[in-house]
Image (cartoon, rainbow, N blue to C red; front, side):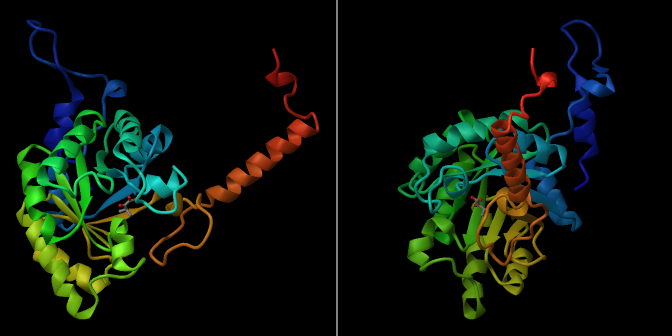
Length: 296
Ligand code: KIV
């Protein structure tokens, strides 16, 4: 996604000390990259360009993905089953996610940082959702939050947006509702497609800046994308959405076990780390590490 040039210029300028005249451009080495803003994602939808989103839960992956130009970093509630060792995304709490979010937001120089509101932290009322959203922006330093659910949550989204909390809506398969939905199942097939279109229209109408769709037939996702002005993001939703998202441990092959059909693995970090740890263990046991070059 091309970055907005006036934004680039603005962020390349260092504010001058009071009374010292016009701002001077910072030396190139000190310039921070222009931040990805919500309006850039909206521009991508208008221009027909695409952006990439990955989950991140700590500083090194945030730094690497940011440097790779990934436009949006999601501090997903998938931390539950990719960081905290739970089986599903349901048990993770606000207090567990907030420090992860803070680490990602402190590290990312350019990417837009979106945080998931975990299960149980927004469903009770619009007030609860506003309060939790504010915590993620204030304590987690997130730039926006994501909530799962359809048209029913439109009033909640409206209240959050009015309170100054930008919201990404997550529809289709919503992992927090895994038990209610009867497991990991594709949503929006056949006649059910209209339900997802209605969800997206209601949530975008309430002020959601983006609609994320998970495990939705490509044709349905394309119809949803065409029905709303806001950008869309897909995970297992075909290629007609404005953006794509993957859980980074799936994308980079860190997680073992069966992968969902929608995952493409771009690396095999699991084997790389297994080899490294095995060699290290062997070196320690055989006295080959540390060598003289590692000793004082
Ligand atoms: O938490 C997460 O990783 C997500 C993605 C599956 C979109 O919500």
